[in-house]
Image (cartoon, rainbow, N blue to C red; front, side, top):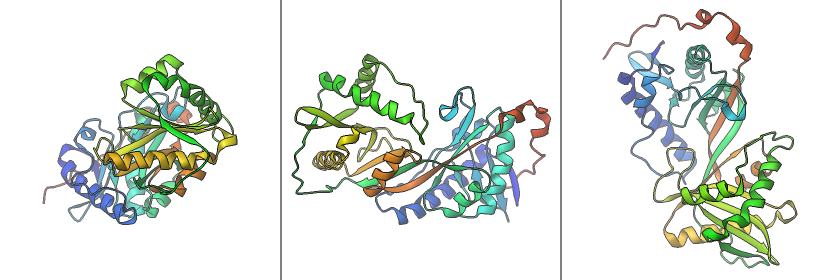
Length: 327
């Protein structure tokens, strides 16, 4: 097996490999849409941080990532990189993925990135095992479902509605409560909380929609819908994404009804799929969403000891690599 730098010449073959991996995941998750193209990989060829593996003249796998970014995954002062869905594939061969990461990680650390995130497919257990053995752990999950009602004859004691723009400030206390809950054990995620004015302006600017559940005049839960999501599936006219959701602890049972209400509206509007992403270490989220959505990605992350950056940079210089010959 020969590992080379990911270059523009690798993009077409890598896209085919990634699309094959997506279609394999779609066999396990029928709610995923059929697509003709995956993620555009051409931009990843420019940052010099990707690698590709070849065996017998054919690409066996590749691993690309974003440019390094600051405060990675909420870690203050730490630079990180992320390989999104479609930016990596290894044909289900854990040895290939392990070899790819070994070469790519040398580049990533040399670029100052010590927080590494990779989005794998949820049913590619070989890929997950390969990276788990290299120190990665599960962090984020993308899930999807068809936009069909859960309880077609749902009649409960709660009232559901879509909020008008002038009503957006009503959900800010729930947004603040959600941010506070994130800081609790075992989640420990100190997500920045915008002030109420900024929060409402961002909702309007993003053209997000807010739905609320009421009990006796009290706002008990809300759900925010966006066009954009975390994977390349977002932006499709038949897809919407849950980008915010919170329920008061004493009203936990209300959220199923609110989700069902939103699904009914999406059905009427001709939207056929609803997605959500959540942090796996959030007990409330990991307990609720899998009941109604099917996971299709497993986002894994690793934090390298940043003291390694004090070592001589040349130690992490990539080995001289053979160039792939066209066949």
